[in-house]
Length: 79
Length: 374
Image (tube, each protein chain N blue to C red):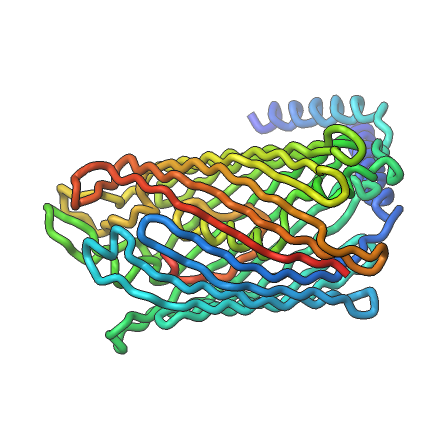
């Protein structure tokens, strides 16, 4: 059983190696001079810090869900 | 001999993988990360709904030193007047004030930004402090930013009128995220955060109902949760009326059996050089915790009637208007902002014991603030 597994691993590794043989390191496809629109304040993923903090606080003290918002908040006993 | 050939192939595979990874990292050194710009923000916030009014001022200042370090300090006040349904049906309305102070330091080195922060929140019966560290590393020619972060929180829990009551709560937050430029007009991000808690996670005031009688709630002393959030934002149009559209989705789950979905979408647009407007909608829904009960019909170790742990959904509609009020090119810019949102909460298994019908309420959220960059 172990021999069969190691043969399968070898075959998969070799197939992977053969597939990657044609790969080159990927290059950034959006050049710095093409990022003008992305630097526009209207494109920010987060808003102004205090306004975001307030909105996050409104949600955290009323909802069961939390986290992964990108907004740092201090703890409180507000629930 | 076969083994040697296999080893050669493995070495080749590692070299190619190394070349791909090296290419991604090497292109990251094309540009350097810059410190966040100096800014100040002064905010008045108001939340009003369900018998609760919470309002107060908040102030933030960020200033860089020697182009290597940026210091941030903020002060946030919550003045709460609470006559929520929990309070009016099982206790007496109350007023209290919460003060929060945050200090932060950002440091940049080549393509990395390190942020450390401390927060301290204080209210008469609850003190909370946190320490956090976050690292953001640009790779792949600045097209990708990888974020790692950790926060440790420590709380002291007290109870009004009962000086002998004292307990603690500890929190650990681990987060990782990636922001990726997709095209000259689109970027997206993915964030994952795991949070673990240990200690007193209930409220010393809240009552549960078992066989129609009020008893103090009892919830587990540990909790562990995960959240995954995906965001995308895209640029539309050109010139002085250019705009942006965004979409977000978060999936949340924890070992109290709560599962939640949050969906948000928004649209922002400039109206010439002076004005900007934003409009957004948010939908949130969650299932109840394993030990949540509106009126428990069996005796269990844990029981809670905290509506934050019940099954409910909420719908938010919001808008914000921003106007440039002062600007000196290359020196400073001051903006006046006003945001308003209306939230509708609809509970699926929490009844208003005064009317015996499922509880619903609407809330208004207002923000008025000045933001300046200099």
